[in-house]
Image (cartoon, rainbow, N blue to C red; front, side, top):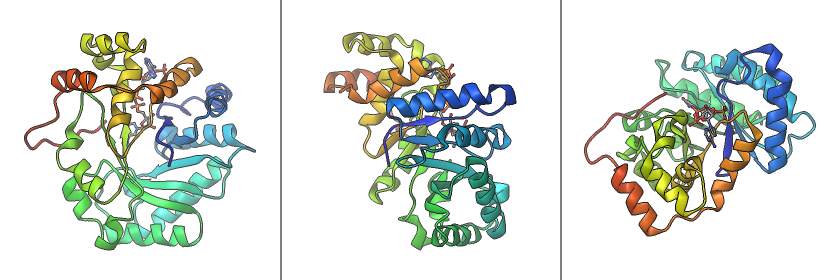
Length: 266
Ligand SMILES: NC(=O)c1ccc[n+]([C@@H]2O[C@H](COP(=O)([O-])OP(=O)(O)OC[C@H]3O[C@@H](n4cnc5c(N)ncnc54)[C@H](OP(=O)(O)O)[C@@H]3O)[C@@H](O)[C@H]2O)c1
């Protein structure tokens, strides 16, 4: 799985923007972005339609991640949701298919459906999103180490996942996919501490936020931008190597949790 992807939340919400948004995604592919993250929830299928338009004729070599609603997590519900997503994206399979957040359907049913989809070649891998430790432990045991990722709210200013969840994933070789890696362009990007490190690397604050996440073992980032120049900027963060001094400065301004804390969610 590529360690850098493009998020698509807030895309596909307005039909008159479809072509423009598809152009943005195509520009990202031209830059070398190989992973696209989406969900049936984004624009109620609209984001998947934008992706379908953007990747027509160029599906090969792409890693598509989509997610289904917890209310579609029953055995038949997952299968039907997946078929709808495939139709919207105009492709035969999804590389990684995730339960968007924990719900009330017994996970044994959900995972049975995911196995069936995998056997039919409609998904290559499956995983979860917004799962805390206790949610992860509720997954049928045989499936726990097969998860393709746990997609969670994770950025320099929100390190809650580092309380138990990332260690659990790391021990099983499960990637942590960091969503809202720029903290949705909130105060993190205006932090003077981040600005100081950025200046030293002739980089932007967004690039330092992404470089810090990419430095964490087994971590994938999926920043969203609808602007090609920013997508290139974000992609270039992968080339930034933070030194031990940078890491210490960032760690002291944005410490990891040292006591039990709830996994954040956006
Ligand atoms: N599993 C889940 O529950 C869940 C929840 C939230 C998000 N996600 C996924 O994760 C993706 C990313 O998270 P997100 O969209 O919440 O937040 P994000 O990627 O942290 O931030 C996106 C915001 O940052 C701006 N931005 C992007 N690059 C920038 C740069 N270089 N400099 C300054 N601003 C920049 C974007 O504006 P412009 O577009 O105007 O550039 C947008 O407003 C989503 O799109 C979605 O695919 C998953």
